[in-house]
Image 1 (cartoon, rainbow, N blue to C red):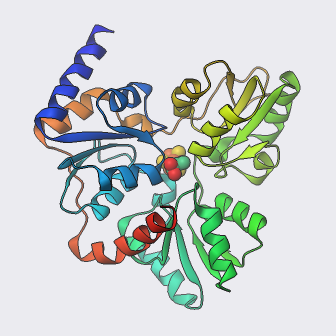
Image 2: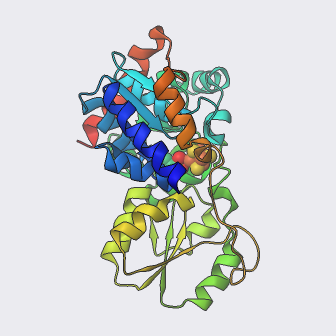
Length: 319
Ligand code: CIZ
Ligand code: SF4
C-alpha cells in the first residue's frame, strides 16, 4: 500500500515537472484511473480520451490504454509529445486488420464509404472516410445511410453486425473481434439472470449477438455507466471489461455490480473479462516513461493528414 502511494506521489510530481497530463481508459487498473482523476487528467472512453487530449493545454500527453489510443492522440495533436506506460499494449482488433490487406479490401469496393472503428492503426485510419467509436457508431452510420451511402465496416464484426441490425444499413463487414468481449457466454449469462431476476443486463456491443440479445441496455462504456444511474434496478450484470467497475461503482455507489460470465455455468463462475493489453499499464511503467521520456508514440508524418481527416469528422459529428 505504501509502495503504491509512493508511486502515485512520484508520478503526480513528474506530471507537473514535465507539463504532462494523464488520460486513462475505463479498462485500465483502477489505480491509474484514480491517479488521472487526482491529477486533473481524464478517465473516459476512447472518444472522450481523444477529445480531452486534443483540447488540453499540456505539452505532453500520457495515455494509459492501448496503442491505438496513443496514436489517435498523436494524430490529433502532432505538436504534443505522447507517452505511454508501454508500447506493447495492442488490441486484437488492430492486430486483425493489417493496413495492406485492409487497403486491398477497400480497393475492391470503391463504391462503399469506409467506416473504421477507433481500435485500428494510424495506417488503417488513413484509408478511412470515417472513424467511429462504439458511443457514436450508430448515429454516424444512420446519417450515412440517410445519404444513401453503402458502407465498408472494419474491424469488429460483432459491433458491425449489431449496427447493421439496428439501422438496416448496407454494410460489408471485416472479420475482426475483440478477444475479451467475444468470451462472454449466453448460456451462462442466462443462468446468472435466473439467480438475480432483479438485475438489468448491460452489454457492450463488441460481444457476440447471442449475448447482446439478452441485454437490457447495449452501449459503449460511457453509455453503460450512465445506465447504472438511469435504470431503477438495484443490481446490474455487466458484460464488458472489469476495469469499468471502478467508475461504475463511483457513479452508482448504492448498486450491486456483477461481472457477466466468460465461462462456466453462470452462478458459480467468477472468471471475468480483463483485457491483457490494458493490464500492461502499471504504475512503475508509467513513472519510468515519464521520468525517462521513453515509450514515446510516433506516427509517420506522411500518414497524419489522411488519418486526421476521418478522426476530425468524428469529433465534429459528436461535438
Ligand atoms: O473495447 C475497447 O477497447 C473500447 C470500448 C474502447 C472505447 O471505445 O473506449
Ligand atoms: Fe482491444 Fe478488446 Fe482490449 Fe478493447 S478490450 S483494447 S477491443 S482487445
